Image (cartoon, rainbow, N blue to C red; front, side):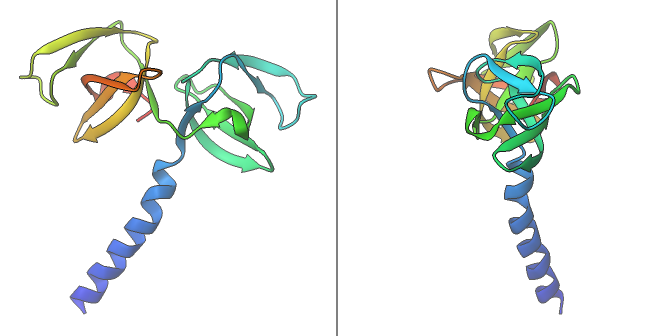
Length: 148
């Protein structure tokens, strides 16, 4: 009975995990109109730039409704959204380290508002790097970024 229960729980986790992980995405083009409603005639609330991390809340037809790190929200035409996960730095200066530990050497510093592509996660650390170059830089503490 215990084996069946463990198998059932594992199956549910495997089925739900991709859905939960996929709600974090990013804007896939530069200067994308974020609208108040899911249509081209609605008001443009703001413009989002390439790599802008978003959390998808729901979809309607070919539009996605999202929330960002400041709790701003709006609608974006779905083809303009990328499944690439990105992270925005939330603090003035954040150390990026060679590995996922405070004991690892600092390779560079990131500044508030900078956006990086997410390459991996390990515990409370996120491996980040350059978006366009698709090049990893190092590891940053998860609590210093939004989007993972």
